[in-house]
Structure formats: structure tokens, C-alpha cells
Image (cartoon, rainbow, N blue to C red; front, side):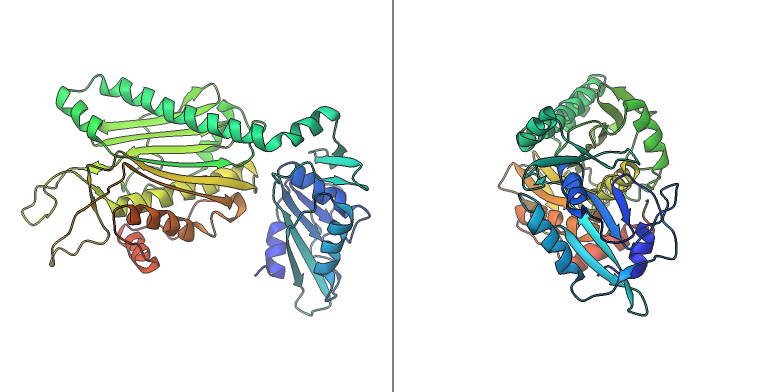
Length: 405
């Protein structure tokens, strides 16, 4: 539930995808449609702004009425084609006399959304004096083909990141001994990717990404040292992003790409060596379930901070993939050594999970995202993952309580 103090928090920083309105404006439908046609955003009704476009506190609010939510919906249904169905939260003040209204609009795959009796298409801009602009014929044409072009671009970004990971890996493996290369060839791999559903234009330049990455401090609680994602040295610039790569040996290979279009791509090797202790039931290399779940969690923590830095709140395609797993054993979490451990083998060569989430919600919904992805992985090996087991997994890996923002 969104509360009045949540609106105060949202009003605390100025973003061009955040719009303040003292009351119901004359053309609320224009702002809603423009945001849906562009990157999405949040409209706060009942929040007045000063000459520097900063919110004036305390919030003025609008007169509280039981029908405020329906009023917003009716404005959309009467004026926007095709209609948009945003998240609307009416937040009364402590006395119940005034209310702030939070309208959160997702970037839409149904764009363009037209207003003015289906005669005008508007886009969101960063011009403080003119937040919405009438779309040109070229921009309308792009919007009409929006989903196909965005799908193609997103597919290209993911494929390019995976290909680069293989290039970097082969460079390092070429210098290894034959026995180490044999281990790498047998490896299972974890790929985690987050990418805006409708990429269109770069958010930043590759050099900007280096500075942005330095502002995201994420302790690596899985490896218990340094920062996440792992890197041997400073990021390497590529034509559309930056790459971080780390190879400790054939058992520990890590690759990360952060892209100017908002893609975060992470890949790591999964097979782990037996410890050598007599009591250890693992007699040959295996995949550790706890590590898989926690690395997915760390990826989402980093992606959450990344999108906050980009001021991006819209839909994100979240994907998890385990490859080359059919011949490698899986150690389910958690292992009870006193009863012995039954190692599991997947009948499938890979495991895949994908889901669309809002970038604005990744931090709050992270545990559930990890649980759903982890369950798909566990089911692939004939096991299961419960919320209680995942919580125990996080606790035993010393997951930090305070996550990066």
C-alpha cells in the first residue's frame, strides 16, 4: 500500500520522469499518454513545485474525495486511445482532509497512445518549460513499429553480450594448461540478464558507465571479498558499454557487461571442486545450489542500483539461464551431512527463467524474483526451493541487510 509518506519520499528528488501537479491539470491525459509513449514515469497530484522545479513541502494535497481514483480513470478512458491502465494510489493525509495522488505509468508496448480525439500523439521531454511535445511523423512511425524494433534491439544486445563473454573467456583460456582448458570445456554456466523491455536510445556513453559503476558499491557476499561484480582490473570500454572480466582459474570465471541501453549481463562458471575432506559427500565437481541463488540475488541488487542511477523506472526483462548442466551434478540447498546428500542430475541441457518486472520494483520484490527463478532451477534438477529455505540460504551466506541504492 502506498502511503502519504511514500509520496513525500518520491517528491524528494527531481527526475524528468517525475511530474508534480498542484491539482488536476487541464490536460492530465496528455502527460499520461506522453509518459506511456516514452519511458514511463510518475505523476504526483497535490504537489506544488517552486521556480527551480523542486517540490514545496509540506504537500498541499487536493481535497480528499472518495472518487479521486475513478476521476483519473475516467480522464484516461475519455481521452486516450488505446487506453492506459496505470497504477493509481490515493494517499490521504493524517487528518483525512487532503490527499496526494500517485499515478505510475509504465512504458507501453501499445504506443503510440493518442489524445485529443485520437488526433495528437505526445512524447515526454526533459524541457522544464515544455514537458510534452507533439510527436513528428518520423517519431510516430517509430512508435508504430516500436515493439518489433525494440525486441530486435534487445535480442541483439543480449546476443552480443553473450558472444563477448565467450571471446574474453577464450582469450584467457588460451594461456592455460590443457588440464585447465578441459575443466573449462566441461563447465556449467550461469547467465543473468536485465534489460529494458523497449530499448530505444542510449541512456549514457561508455565512459559515463565507468563513473556510474563507481557509484554503485555492492559487497560480494558470495565470494566474501571485494565488490560485485568481480573484476581483474578497471572496466574495459567496448563500442556500446563496458566489460568487467575475472578469471582466477578454470573453476572461477566471471564476466559482466553493462550496456549504454540499460543492459546488465552477468556470466559465471558454476562447477566447484570437491573440498577433499573425507566427510564431504561431493566426490566430483558439482553445482552448488546456494551459490546459484545468491548470485542471482546479487545481480538483482546491482541492477536495482543501476536503474536508480539511470532514473529508469520502466519494464525490465529479467532472465536467468543455466547452460551445459545435463552431465553435471547439482547439490540442492540445503545439505544435511548427517543424513547424506543425494546429488541431482538434470535430464535437460539447460534451465531458463524469464519474467517482466518494473525497474522501480526490483529492490522491493527482489526476494520474490530470486525465489521464482530459483524454483525453476531447482525443478530442472527434480528438487524444490521454498521461501523458508531461500531465507536460510541468504542468512548462511551472510547476505547484507542493507542493500545498495
